Image: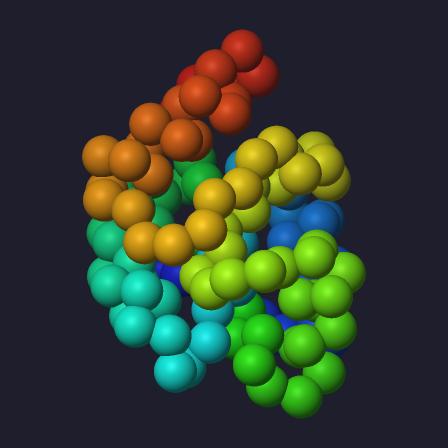
Length: 116
């Protein structure tokens, strides 16, 4: 499954409702943000490798109504990546991370509840 791009309007369905079935990793990013450009291909790789076991959603929060999501989730830097599962925030990190670092983050947050 490819990375899904959504907006404020689609957030409930693409993230919260989808998180009832499987973990959803949301990348809140901005077009001017260099670390956002670094993490993007890593998330693409994870979306491909964890296909059917993890959903990855991207939201550009520096555009129009999407800025409301930055306020709702009290984002202080970009990228901020938040993991949702069963409609709850399970964890978050800011800045670029390596692929191994993101996998470690996922396993740590989901260890008892979900085994990909």
